[in-house]
Image (cartoon, rainbow, N blue to C red; front, top):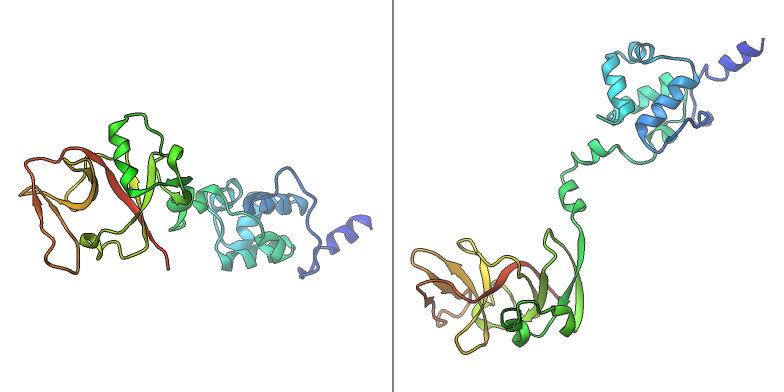
Length: 236
């Protein structure tokens, strides 16, 4: 009789159904499927038969190789006699999270980039081991694969189409071999910094301005590169 009562508890799934007893880590969908399946005495093949899927599919769910889609979650909750909310809650598996379009971006580290005065950016070339944190006036959080960055506010009229007024420009000073069309920060012969778009064939530094009177600088080769623009942030 006790066995009949226990089985009757799972006869009709509903939103008030209790959660199965925890068995190990049930923080993932796969772990909850496994826990609920074992609670009602099913093996993977039994559950697969109830759902009309293959046994390897159930195995993949439980190990986190794939997570069940939303419509399948409802069928699973019914087959396992558990609350759908409990089954669907919690984190997706690592394999599933990696398939999200934003996964690569979200995995990137957040760096607190020092903001320094524009005129001081040339110090990155004058002193090889100079640390921009020493003269930082502020910091801005940036996600990037590089750890060697600094930022400054651009006020160069020759670059106002790329960086309008009150734009923070972030330089990767580990990237000193620019590709065609990269925007670079260089040190001029007089020791001042210059922000321009690098173009090849012929080698030149172009302005990017609403004013056509800013000249293009033709050079034999690009030297004294402080770094390449990696991010720009417009403040309003």
